[in-house]
Length: 90
Image (cartoon, rainbow, N blue to C red; front, side, top):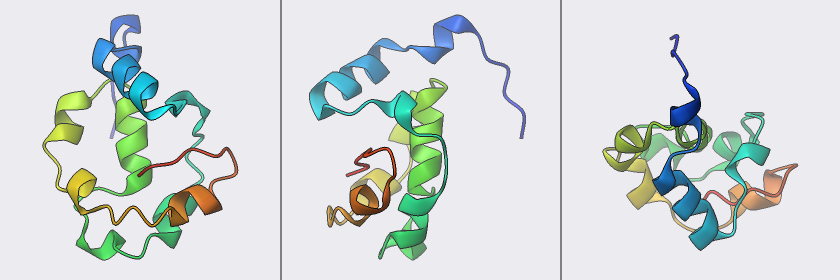
């Protein structure tokens, strides 16, 4: 799937707020997929954790808010323990 990116999309105000509140640097994620591979509840998600991060990186906040993935997360921190950049999805 191709996305047309514009500068305004890349740093949405809501994405900046998410980063501030969570203390996470979403741009640090380089999409290795380890978070998704290690997630114990990924089978119940409609969007992989790595895809959620990527969509936030490119400013697709509405798509992320419409997914059930963000509510299914078990907060087990398996994603964070596997992430080479220390990004915590939960």
